[in-house]
Length: 545
Ligand code: ADP
Image (spheres, rainbow, N blue to C red):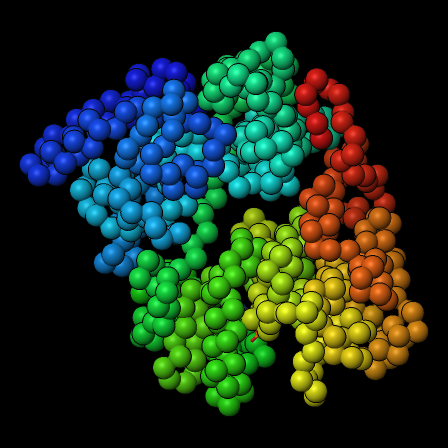
């Protein structure tokens, strides 16, 4: 459970920090030296993890200056190469160089090993980010998803930075009620002007840890006493290891192809392992289907653009044919196949909204980077554990200069997903991606039905030109408001279509407020009472839904 920061001296990990004995004499001296120079670090929960790690002299709440930066492992990590260092959750390390964005050069304070570690696996020691219950980059919708996992009991909780108040936080707690079943309640944690925090004005705390400790002992009007922190998902890895960050051509014999996953446009796709340990997906390029240069261009784009809703490219093997492109492995395959198979069919309405949100969020990132995808469809979204969705094949995108990209004549498009101006005039833009997103929504809410059922491509082009739009499905449940969003994505005028920023917020905020617990068996037959989280339900003075 949370630790009281004001009594930090009593914490066992602080005692460990006092002296290092039994190590080789040089190292022992060095480590003890570090400790002497390192005044107690008092965390400032209003600063982000990255800010703190990057600051050479970390200001503390008491305005002391911390000259060294000790980080503590929030997850286990197993070394992958000669240049990185293994560690276990709770291990402490001194940062000696943080100039690389992703990999910190550290000395492990127990083993004495020096090398690189992934920065997103650690947090500054005694900082709020090092607490098991603190989730730095989690949105409200993601918090719902994580907490609602079956293994989490009532009272499981997490604290996350507020999306609306830059100095505030939110406490998300899993609850259960007879009428609603399991659901998540979110409480605002507001900052006090003179430092400190509160949920309810009559109970104020100096630190977030104190607040969490207090509500772990007594609910004080919350829906439930805080029981245990929500398990944290493994952080995203962007490279196979520190050595492959910039040089990502790898020897082919380090990749073992284990199982064929599917057939792509350009070749087979396999599940495999790198150096017999790291799971990867390997796309192979059939000889003669595409130039090596074009393939590597796709790879370069994928490597450059990083977002948790885009599939990560790890490496390529391009020295011989067939070329391999080595990607993050997504265990449940393409969204289209997933929706059509048994497991996908068990997705409930909230899961569908969650997928819609994640895809919009990945596309919002491409929107800010001025990239267009040109082939957004359920077949190009991959699903991983916990219904995590990531966009793939964005390598077809091109950096655009005047908001618009005209492909060469003769290019083929997936007609049913492509906006009319892109088909007729070749005008691809982020707004033609919004059109495709609308089609993807229809695929999603009809569990993978082919768009415009019964119509051929040519007929679709002609009818859409004349103003025809896919009707609201009668076979599956789809709220009017989401259908209206689809229609807005299919506005004839690209400029009238919503932005991905809007779509992300829309699905992020979309909430099922049905009174009776949701049952999937009803999704296709009985319309549910649905709404958006625009109202505050005043069960508790600071609670919002
Ligand atoms: P292409 O873009 O060459 O047409 P796809 O990306 O569509 O190939 O891949 C074909 C199939 O391979 C997908 O439908 C999916 O089932 C599987 N696949 C592709 N990439 C991955 C991945 N990263 N993880 C898991 N499965 C994948």
